[in-house]
Length: 98
Length: 302
Image 1 (tube, chains in turn cyan, green):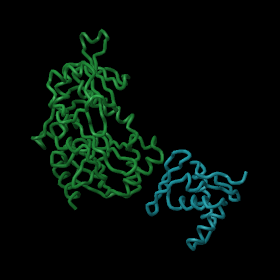
Image 2 (cartoon, chains in turn orange, red; image 1 turned 90 degrees about the vertical axis):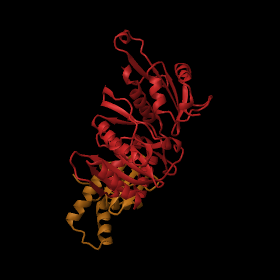
Image 3 (cartoon, chains in turn red, yellow; image 1 turned 180 degrees about the horizontal axis):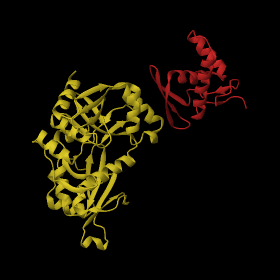
Image 4 (tube, helix red, strand yellow; image 1 turned 135 degrees about the vertical axis):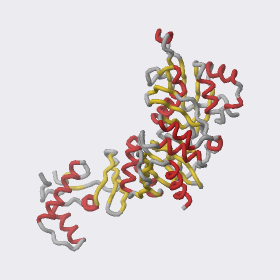
């Protein structure tokens, strides 16, 4: 099951998320849950984008493609949707639209 | 005053009364004991530890006593009490000294949350600390005893105590327990090192303690920054290998190795990330102590 492509999601900002980045690997401490997460670079970018403003899977995928000069095809959309789902499952993002 | 200066009779009398106060690293421990065999071993292994004058606030109140059960008549036992509670079942009375050591370790691990506590040996050379984090069976104590026998300052065999606010390592030098084959390994490796009596049939097999070098005790108040993270892994017959590891891997290993990472929350995260950032990081596979020590000496001299 993937995150709904048109649903907007949001992530908390740096007031509750503390980052340590080592190149393409990132550790993240969530002050709300006191959990530590190790994230790959794409997952970290998705989360950081959602912390800036609520967005859909499509919004974030298009933004990341634009930033890396890539084509945003269906496969990439599905990949980003999976990352959304993983972030949702560990409580790092939540629906912005109620 | 150090413990060695206290006459034997006074020591026994005070242990069976209000106890003595001993400074070990940053902690003051009140020790009481109603078990005769304990005092000579305490004096032998803690001879150069400072005694603290009364009145003082102790961090740990330890009382070793004989349980009052009928069993004591044919199977003498020792009961470890910490702050008035007995966290463990009684041990055979002949194991009172290892019981004291394990009990104090347990108390520190349960209470000293002003520090990030790593399950790690820590030794110092040239003003920097090498942390040897490992779970039991990896050869941590053996390697630690070997390094100390070759001039490294003992910070601790058991705890990497990291001060939260600045990341400095806090010494906690105490006797190093060797287990089973490690006892003879260190006897052969460092014949001049003083190793105490062997306690057979403990939960960890045979245990014997290496006496803490006096110089390490004398410098127990001198903190030092971390320099190296070396995760040791003893494997019989394994060739020596010192392999650098990346920061994420070191972070994971260190966080999982800590006694209180989770409990410290954000402070734990920040303390571990700072350690990983500031240290050179390696996995050490070894079987030959001489080779391992040479390699770690080279690392320190580089």
